[in-house]
Length: 168
Image 1 (cartoon, rainbow, N blue to C red):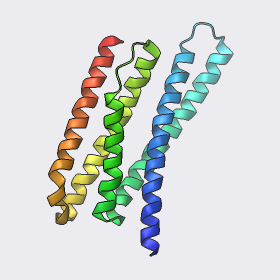
Image 2: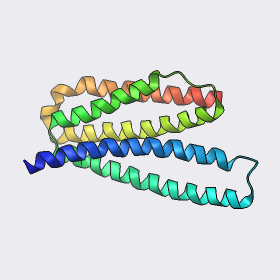
Image 3: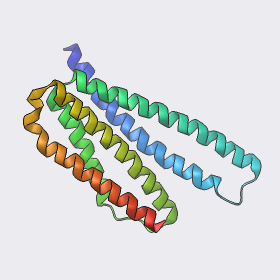
Image 4: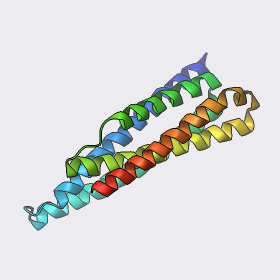
């Protein structure tokens, strides 16, 4: 079935985009740290600023693609496929949150940035889920546990951001 193949492709693509967003966040943090280094001359600094600007544009484009694909998944996939993709991501974020908060300043800043990325993606996922429920009442039977998991993870992400900001 062509629609099924497209759905699987969209799911894999969504996971790949999410991974790219996390990697872009790490790279952006590294470039910000290099930019703030006092040992750079103005030419090196200008080069990093240009790279950061390009990276931020790529990040915005990737977020846009992610949101579009996430919306397509809601419209084109069956409930089991949606729950599978989203549950896997929530589990990934839970594992991320179980890691101890680092003590290194540079890593703290990276962790803060990643928390914000995850918060944005989980919020987007929750909003897409609420939309799906509004158009497909058959999902309601599975939704309470899933909604509670979203709320719990968002709460932990915000708490972690606060802890990191206090350490920075």
